[in-house]
Image (cartoon, rainbow, N blue to C red):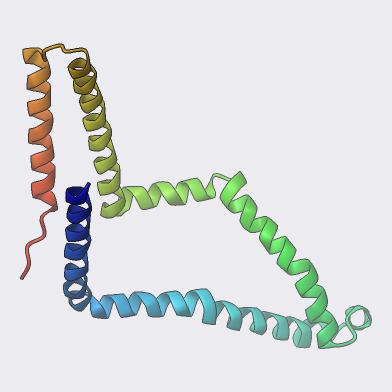
Length: 174
């Protein structure tokens, strides 16, 4: 048990030692990404919502007496908009993610274009294949059976595939 805990610690330590190198290498792009996320998710969203409320009230509602009688002040308009708009937008968001094919299409495109997602898929497929081979070997060994030449060949082929896969993952430090 101590050996496994030590290996996990060393593995985590290696990852921690690599992080400053990776972060220094990509600092400008990481900052640009965080800036865009902060801007689009928070600042631009809030600013656009406030802008929409102000423009629609002062350019549309104030100029029409019928609408002005329904919303006598901006505060009334804001409260009605929040009470109706927020639940409506939550329902639309739920439909987008759970009931329509739009989110599935977005996820498919992300999987097709993002090499990290593709790598996760390849890793998962390789691991499933390895686990299946491993359970077959364990079952045979638990029954005191010998592995056949074809099974040994399959395991060798799987080892070569893993080696090739690992060689592609190695990142060269500059």
